[in-house]
Image (cartoon, rainbow, N blue to C red):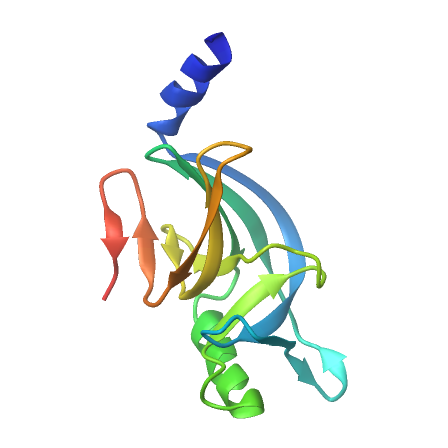
Length: 143
């Protein structure tokens, strides 16, 4: 019971956990078909931080890019490389990773498929078709 009270209390606030990293990029279409993004036979990687955010009872994990413009550039590279249906650039360390999205400072999450959890056992997948902004006052679409 005490653990539940702590979780509920903390869920009302943004909990931002970070660790520096590089990760690979894959491209996905709306049917969840995906391919690794590569250039000159090398997998494309980007630098940033894996972040975990708790907001309104849900926990989100995403990869915050060091370069704000990178997400749009990666999405264009996906379309150029694999065709117009591959509209989502997404981060992953291996083929066994879950679905995460890219983000930038300020809690802006880019479009793609992502997992969010109410607790360790109740996780859901969602297609985010437009950018989202996550902050303590607003949880909705950006543009």
